[in-house]
Image (cartoon, rainbow, N blue to C red; front, top):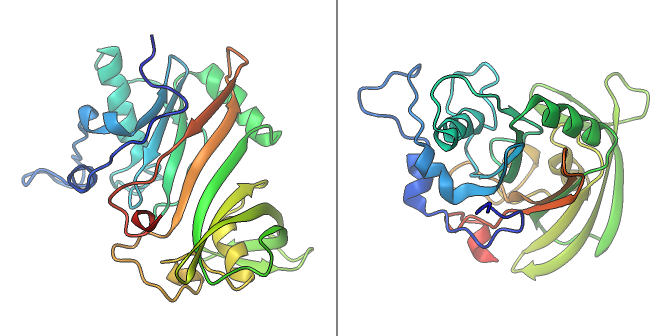
Length: 260
């Protein structure tokens, strides 16, 4: 029986584990990053022969993307090698990714068939992505749909007009969950998946995400993380055709989520 359930219990990602995820051996060069499969175990949210879902800690890249830096995909690939008990190359590809400063669900495909089918699900918008965001201030409405046109360059998204070069329609819905001092916890249902979409759209209504200084936040992060967490992913299993709901608990070591 699969010990990794889609609806996972709360996972305690302790600070020591979080730091060890980015540490290198003293005599290790940048090109020789060490990944320990066992250290990823507490972050596994769902695993079977076709899928692997991980609760990514903030501060870790989802993929290498040519940087040569420590990243979740390579770490997860080492976990799969250990899980299969086979050295060498294994198939593992990210179905989607989240920003380095963001935490939460990242889904990987363990087979080419699963990857192709999940990519089609995402293109057809047949999956559901739910984020939690701690924002500065209070939005004008407790529940609303935000529609903007976004373009991006120089690692930043900008609100623009329809028809502008590079403009893409961005849509999300949010609802306020609770007020925490001068912050508001939102649940965000992401309809489109544009570059920095949630960050740019919430900033555009005067409510930047806490810690997100790039988009105008006043409250600073202690370690570069922002208060945005990919809380839940709902998909159809690529082979079983059954619904899968993957939920990621908050990290206990986060300055933001320990406030909840």
